[in-house]
Image (cartoon, rainbow, N blue to C red; front, side):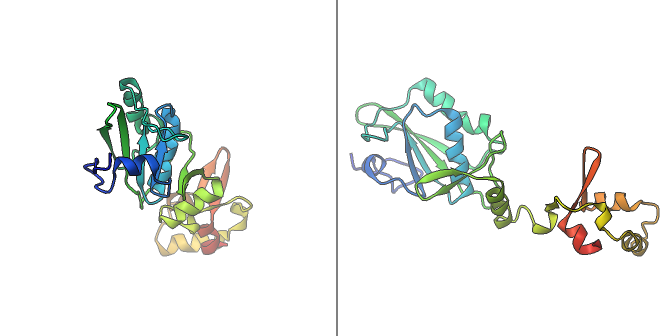
Amino acid sequence: MSAFISKLDPSLTWERLQYSVESQYFDRKSARIQPKDLAHHISAMANAAGGVIAIGIEDKNNEISGVSDIQENNLRKAPFEFLQKIPIHEVETIIAANGAKVLLFHVAPMPDDVIKCKDGEAYLRVADSSRRLNSEQLLELEYSKGIRSYESQILKDASLEDLDHDLIEEYCKILELNGSSPLDILKARGLSKQKGEDWEITVAAILLFG
């Protein structure tokens, strides 16, 4: 079984699917994988450089055990049910010589988005593993993709008292915003955010009016 078998990735053969070492761009999973766990791997590849997830091949002995119709139905729905945003992907069905069905999830990289699960967690493909990102790692990923800027980050130890209100009022006069309160101006420009009864301020607010 060495013929090329994928219409979407001509480099794939049965030999490669069964026996190649898992890598940054390739992962092999049993059909017993839960849809939620599959969503984690899709998130990881979409947040990195993309890749292929082959489902229906056993990890331990490389046996092509296949995917049932019910399993296929549930797995195809995984990105829609467990991810906040659906990454670009295609699902390809191929049939082995023993009649077993294997699913290939072709996941495209998402350079301008961070693909998160509906519980807020995000994953990143690193070599041959999908790693859950902690809050700092997620923030770094958002910075690297240009989704979030350092200036928009909330400063937890800062408050409105740390700002020069005379400077804010001068800013309002320059822009002829005399009818607006300083707090309204900060909020409208994303320099402050309300959290319950308290107000948080951003790095940009400190840089401008600290």
